Image (cartoon, rainbow, N blue to C red; front, side, top):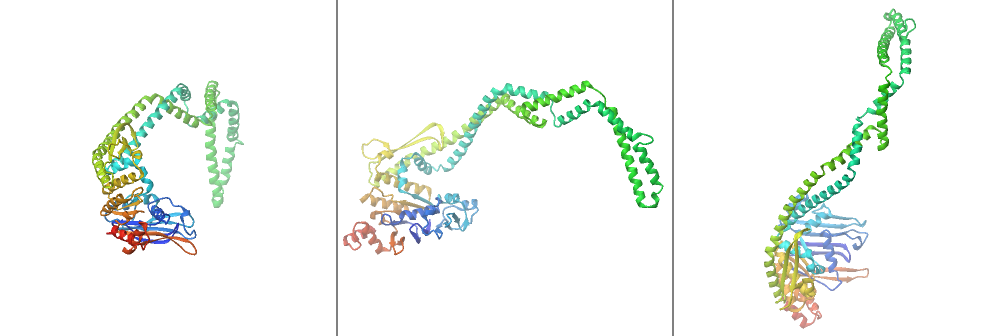
Length: 550
């Protein structure tokens, strides 16, 4: 439950602190005094989007801080999952800096807004005036039924299964589209693939073929120059080899005189060995050179095939052609194996269909099971709230579709008066009746969800007199099991609270401020007397106020 709320530098609030208790707490104040401001600040603690324009003094940061007693609400797992320190009294703080940036903290550890939102759903339910209108909304109606049916886990499971089912369906459609497109291009792709495969392409073959072509195409020049080079090396009198050997002979005679000469001898010896090897290799190369017109033509044809393929596919290398062949092979395989792939995808869809259908059926069964008791409880509460003849009808039917929360269609109908026909609840109920129905629903939900705190923002819209008394009694009963905070304009409800705060504006020479005080018994009498339409000093109004307070 919320034990303390501190608001600094927010809207019309400079600095206020509320120390709250369990039970039923009342907040009153004139229209425009700042009750919505307080709810806005509390919304920031629960993860609402920060608005820089809400800072009162833009040179200072805005700070909203709430202390929550959470020891009885099994939240240890959340703190462990979020890697946060668990404290039985945990502190949530939200800051809006003058720079416009927003920061959030749980027990002084910086957290993302999503963490606040997750924790907030387990701490507080804020019922706004607008939410009453959502009674006619199918999503809200489902949420009520699913909360009572304890379907949260099954719905999460269903959503995961639905995501998988949609993924299989999408893949099936993609395969069909790919098959249709591939079928159109199959013959052409197969022709291109065969053409590339027949070329016998291998990495590096173009360079080898070009080198071989040059050798075969220049036989005479190769023979002439290799022979001349060998002659320069081999001639008995002036050949390079003989000249080096003669030099070595001379140096060998003086090698013993100095390390320098000995080094000359070794280097000449190395040169002779290298030249000797070179002579042998050049001789082999010369013997290998021979005119072969047939092989030249064959190599030339291979080169032309590759050049034509490069031009055709706009490729700069054989490696690129090999990549193109690989891509073509994949396209051809898609077409050739499409039937098997489609059958496999269809089997996956059918299998997932069975899985998700079972979960949808479980959701339907759980909903159907609790609807009669929910209707009965709601009608009993509505009788207490001045709607003795109200009848609620909830129709739950299955569809052939997989919707976001199952395969059900849900509609709430109301017959507000005796003998009246059932109509959609948003059409059958007045504003005051909607408020009473919403209170009935919330009181049932509160018993089911075990929330620490629920805040009602003018749940009493459209009601008065004895109905307001009954509303107050229901809120007070709810407050026996949880913390209930109600913002109200009705003294009949305000009188039922176990504690009472008043929000008001105060003008100074500089600015207007929203302030809040906790009312003592005499102050509560004055406040209720004023709400009843009298002045603070009116004896009749004060007597009535005392009666409301018992």
